[in-house]
Amino acid sequence: MSTVTTLSDFSVFRTLSRSTASLLRAAPLGEGLAISQWSRDGHENLGYDEPGHHTLSLYLRGGERSFRIGRDGLRGGAGKFCVLPSEHQSRWSMNGPVHFLHLYIAPQRLAREAVMRLDCEPRVLELRDRTYIHDDSLADVCRTLLGTDWDDPSQRLAASSAAETVLHHLLVQGVARKAAPPARGGLAPAVRRRLVDYVDAHLSEPLALDTLAAVAALSTYHFARMFHASFGEPPHAWVRARRLARAKALLASGAGDLARIAHACGFGNASHLARAFRQATGATCGQYRAAHGR
Image (cartoon, rainbow, N blue to C red):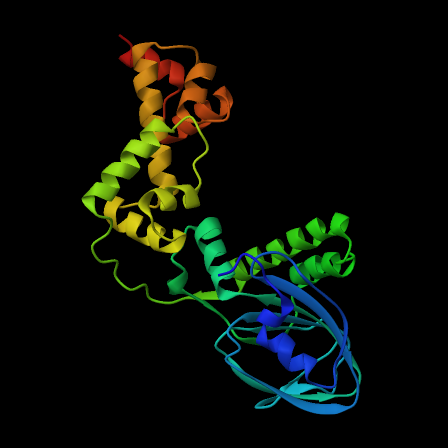
């Protein structure tokens, strides 16, 4: 996906631009994200056929006479959300005055968040198609979005941060899990050795998933799936185990105080190491050093 996202990249935005709806304001919010605010009056039928991106819609005012064709028993209204997945199909009868907010999300962006936030293979997740729901936590985030000036660079960060919160909410509350296809083969032996060598050489540094994926020359979500197939656990758990193994070796050798060992193993400070070590082993660092020290 291109690193530059424009509003015209999103087909729902293009459809509304050709309708009788009036665009009040709109802005891109980073890679794979954009936002728009609309108003309309009168009657019009609209349809979306597999738009190729996800859309979160919030009615701000009006819309009580509007409905989704085929789900006529559900009516719109202020404070009601719709979640429209990229592959959905829908027809809408828009009646009377209505003001609404749209957040457009590229599937690749949501997939990346699934890997980074949930350490989950995106292909096992399916965004649920939902019509006219209430969600107080989403409403709070959207109030932040509405309260920022999207054209003001000093406020764009606040809007982007709120949009990121929406992404996380959708991943936690708005997706269903499909049966995961079996991971075949895993990582090649040479790639596994390269990863082990890289991680061991950089344990004192922060290690991000996209960094390890680059070492393996794979996309992040494909890398996470293949890594689990090869090592039997997700990347973050495996790296944590390597950090603790390094800490054990340093404690046993008597090399340095706890703060120095914590830094060498990539823990933020001695307290962080102490907590992680006790949680993993059931013993304190001091107890381990006393029992295993040379």
